[in-house]
Image 1 (cartoon, rainbow, N blue to C red):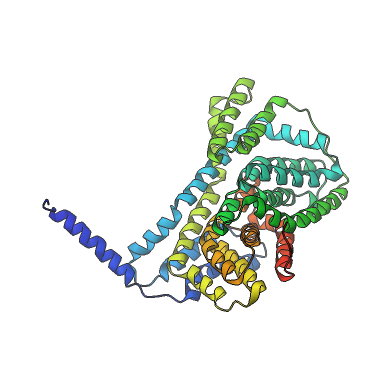
Image 2: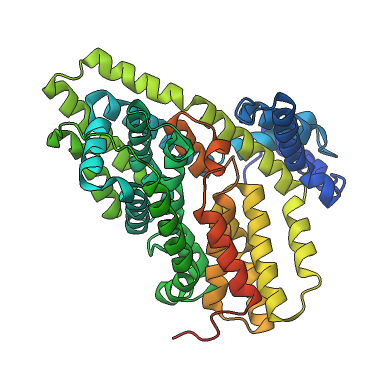
Length: 458
């Protein structure tokens, strides 16, 4: 055995001392651990009420105050340790991956707009879809694409710029109103994206739910489709009704088919199973080739559009990092464990067991702002509850996926809504106020639990 240098002994001693301090950290009340989330909601909501404008208060400011509060209430840890925990959450690999996607999505969307891809896609949509079926057509297209590519974020990246372009065309044509606004049409895409993501065989939420419950994807699909298909049908009918109220349909302009290539390619590559980062990178390169060869871009304007697209995602990136750090502190301080213990303490019967699983994954998603992580975090506990109360694993997997998507679709700091808001240039709250599918889906999912439906699976 060799002699260990003194400097290594000193470093080891410091490391163990730091861990010892962590172990001696005083336990925190569960409600206190969760209080940063309450502070965030109160700051945002109260400030918005005082300002009499829910779109005026930056969500990043509310998260900053809540994050400072979360760091301040940590017990038994030095300030350096608290900031370290916060930084680990903000720099989590999943958070950073989402940030890279945001950066590439901003660059892709901005360059696509610069070469005229959005205008061409909008013109095609207006030509193919009659005015009365425009909204329903957008919703069904979003459902299909999201189900095909297995990612709501990818669908939002591809379609929200088109939705924003259609809203702009309607406004220019004089069709002003709630049902022609950018938030309303953007919400159509977001709702359809959640439908497809929830059912897709290649969605990470589907994979997480089926693996934790040890059931096949096909069986989970059969259980899931019976819950969400009626909700999607009702929403499609609503969009047909709202579309009929639009008396003006803008005339479609010329279609430059070569400029459709970026969106078609992005959708096709995503459907093939390629990683979304690679898809957006390739799409960005195609935008450059089309723009430079066609004369709509110069090298300087190409770089300028990339920069403007990334800058447009700045607030989104800051919110993502602040949320990741704050939620990590909530987890470390025992907030998530507190939720789990509270929900599983007094379960009575199968209905109560299913409701507890739904509440468990919903609260986990509220605290993590990531439906896949919420399912992975609570999947083991849900499996134990399923076995203990004799539940059907297929329905448990469906509950995990459906309720996590429900919460992900209605929290203003979820990645999908942040992405959609960033691409459309609007606030997340304005989108939520026009979302129909997540709420109707949630109502059907809750009804399926309360009525113990479906009673039999094929």
